[in-house]
Amino acid sequence: MHEFRHCTDAADLAGAAAAHLAARIRNCLDGREVCRIALPGGRTPGRCLALLAGDSLPWERLHWYLGDERCYPPGHAGRNDVMLEAELWSRIDTPAANRHPIPAELGPEAAAGRYSSEIVAAGQLDIVLLGMGEDGHTASLFPGNPALDDSRPVVPVHRAPKPPAERVSLGLSTLQAATERIVLVSGADKRVALQRVQAGEALPIARIGPLLWFVDDDAAGRS
Image 1 (cartoon, rainbow, N blue to C red):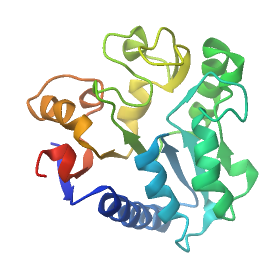
Image 2 (tube, helix red, strand yellow):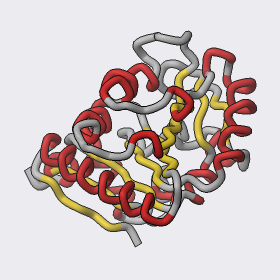
Image 3 (cartoon, rainbow, N blue to C red):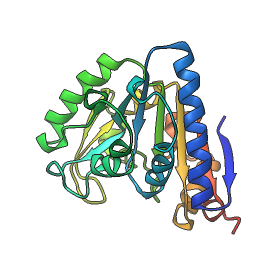
Image 4 (cartoon, rainbow, N blue to C red):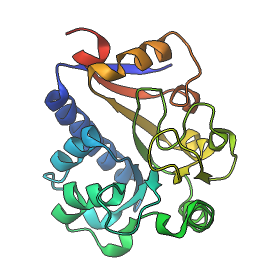
């Protein structure tokens, strides 16, 4: 079953999610040498990760992966790894080898193939942090897009309904297999999608399985 944690606003949500994420990382490291975490793009996760960067975690024991990436050249402002560099990686003492960006500049097929090898080598992801779009998509798995039903660990995405049309995403099977899956949802524009999930509709985000949701009042319709 889904678990929902309600927050008053985006700032409250970012703080609560960052605290939870730090606690889960520490818990993971109690039982193993490294913790493997997949991260999303987006403004709401960015706020959370900026707060996480202020924690005193053993950064050298964390490995960072991406939930998806847009097929732009390296350094393009629209890439998720650019946001992650600004909000998290540049603020922590993490080895370059612990960052695992998706080489989306190679194009969807080549990048998905190369990143699949990295994900298979990593094994089960310990934590996946996700966002949700207004249509219920997560990572770059959109409703009705063939990538949603692609069984590979990492999937090429063509004809995405929002730019850019070409992307790379962790596959549904990889997201489903993660030990813990956390979703951050903020803003009134996500309210309808959230209601559809709560009504049992099989939107992409809901197909991942049980999730821990951090939801603010605007998204929950409490404001």
